[in-house]
Amino acid sequence: MHVEDLLRLESLDLTLLWGDGPQLTREISGVTATDLEDPGRFLQHGELVLSGLVWWTPADDEAKAERFVAALNGAGAAALLAGEETHGGVPEVLVDACRRHGIAILSVPVHTSFRAVTDSVYLRQWGDLSRRPAAPYALPENVRAELSRLLADGTDPDTLLTRAVAHLGTPPAYVLSATGRTIARTPTAGPLSVRRAAEALTATTTLSVDPDASPYGQWHLHLPDPGEAPPRMLHEIAEVLAQHRRTRLRAETRSRAAASDLLALIDTPSNPAPAPLRRALQACGLADQGPYTVITVHGPADDDGALDALTEALRHLTGCGFAVGSLPTGEPGEATALIGARTPTATDTATGTATGTATDTAADTIATLKNLWVTLQSRNANVPLHAGVSTPAATPQDLKGALTQARYALTAARSGKTPGTGHTPGTRHTPGTRQAGGTGEAGAAEDPSPAARITAIEDLTTLDALLTGIPADVRTAFGIHALGPLADDTNPSYRMLLETLDVFLAHNGSWARTAEALHLHVNTVHYRIQRVEILTGRDLARLDHKLDLKAALLCR
Image (cartoon, rainbow, N blue to C red):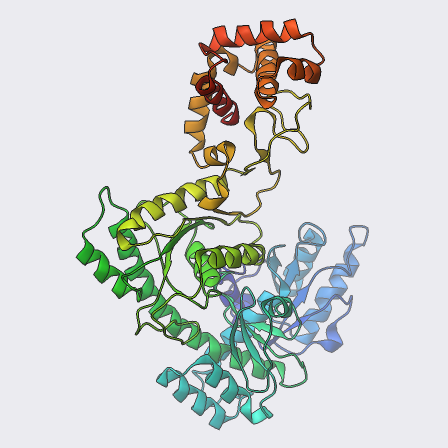
């Protein structure tokens, strides 16, 4: 592997600060991370040097950076990768020193860990070594030959992992998913709970199998005892597992295409004919009898992040089958899944089991997903991951309605509001603002952070919850037209009337309690409500008109 190869890895997002042809074509022999001011005696020729620049401060003179780079040059370092996190960037004096000594320097952004760089280097080196018969391997030749045969035969990951470490005495070893699901383990490795496995992902003895995978689709090789295998050998084993994963991805791509065809059939103006729908379900390995549940997710808009996230979440449901794909009318970053019973011959790629009945109920499915969602979101904390879940569809002909429900619930989840909360009666507040522990006239608490949410249709049990599933522009238009002139927030008099209306409705139309809550005379409340009725054209003695204005307030 050469220095220039690092710049081609989009997952690392490295930036070349200085370096030209001769420097970029240097071969990388290994990686060393250091924050020593003079690391020369610890470096080997051709190594890539990672430094967080803790050894340097803005008050230091130019000579300090000069000594550091001179040590790298004297040891024959291939290049310097400098982290941006400590100083918010890479000091110019360090770039100048690298230029004088002929050492390529690349900056490492805050969101790229040094571990990701190290993993990428060693995994790429495995690919280079596999094309060089004379190159040294950490894995014995007979083990490499056996693993190659197992890969060609399409063996399961448990067998592959066990044989990869058998020459070491078969120590405990795991392959874990991004959310702590155990994909494979050796016979000597005891079962891990999802919580413990998720914690193991951050251990120093855990290695990413394929750094180019999405955060949700990543696999991790974990050995509880760091002394069981040399680091280079672990990287070689990880590359074998990465090849197995890529083979499975090709099959998964075909499955997603079949699922997308099924979803396109469901997402039509009229219900599809029974025969094509039955064939599409069977092509996805799903039974042609319900119940079914539909879930729609919105996440990263690039690549297959949302598809990977939804697939990983559903693989925790061991008692049912699923098909994950994209709707033809879906937004970028949207993925949809149909959950139901497997056909008697369908085999789940994650567990290798087959069944003709779904043992997970809809309530089990929703509970499992909600418990998992925080962990799933943490895999890519910068992009909120929202989901909407339908009620069970009893038959294939009910799937269109279930899809509509899931998309409605997704809109509610993305609204940024926690439905079902109302302000405490008697609390004085100004419409158009959010109150701690209350909601003002909108009846929903605004979440200050873009937290991920999973919302099921069954969660929408109140009027304000129901309204969160309506598109924002429709809610706004309804509020404006129903409230008439009162929708003008720039008019202080109208804001006062809206506040009175909100408190009046919150106190079930009680004149006395409204007056008490607003510290007003009852006659003043009567006058203000009469003004509201005139400006909106509504009669607040009528229940339907009260509901109209309550909905309008909730839509603001």
